[in-house]
Amino acid sequence: MKRIACVLILVGAVSHIAAAADPGSTFRLFVAPNGNDQWSGTLPSPNDSKTDGPFATLQRARDA
Image (tube, rainbow, N blue to C red; front, side, top):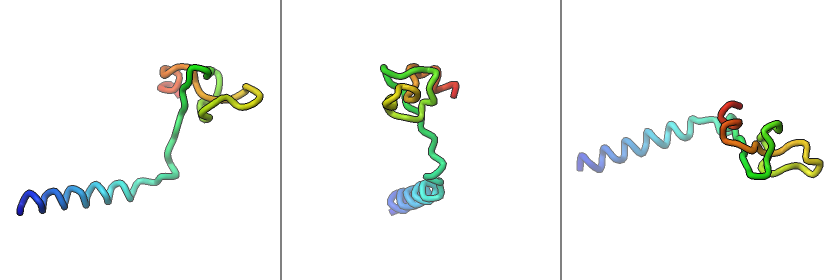
């Protein structure tokens, strides 16, 4: 019984923390083999004019 109570409290606490997180503040960067480290990294694939898209390396995403 104590184990079930502890699990329920833990699940409730995790749910509360997850609900408190602001999903609007998510910051996503994209890295792809066809990317370019001079781009913003905010698009999952290059745009039509090839002026913006994902980064090419994980190091560039880390440093952003």
